[in-house]
Picture 1 (tube, rainbow, N blue to C red):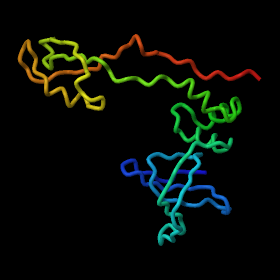
Picture 2: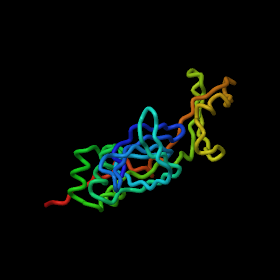
Picture 3: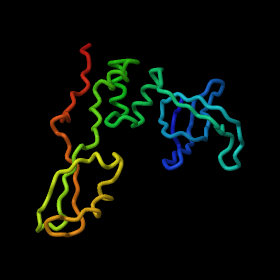
Picture 4: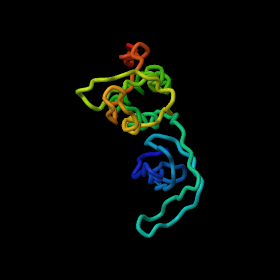
Length: 187
């Protein structure tokens, strides 16, 4: 079980973590590559023991697989690690006390819906005096393109000025503004 993430590089996934393992009384330092990892997660690793001149004995993982925790201690560490926005150490204890090992199911049902990419774009002339604007379909571009990359491509039909101010036109009718919070059972 991951006790602490000492270092993690977001660009290449390299991480240094401290883990609790069977057969070792103290925490073990593990180095390897994982896309994301947080305290409380269970890991399976294959690799070799190395003795680093600077950092001492550590396990260098060639393969690293993470899974969500199942023990109460692991669940609490995972929730308190900041992986889920809005849940810290105090709230993690309350959630675990109220829901036990079913806490992930309760949280999953109460997460806000993921926002879909906009279906339309609002395009306004870059010249604020012109005030020409239009709505157009966003289907012709891929979902992960930045709007700032599209802005210089537009030419206003009214004033012939190059450049635009582009904003997503969210379908506000289908987006739930508020999500009910987690309700604790009465004890």
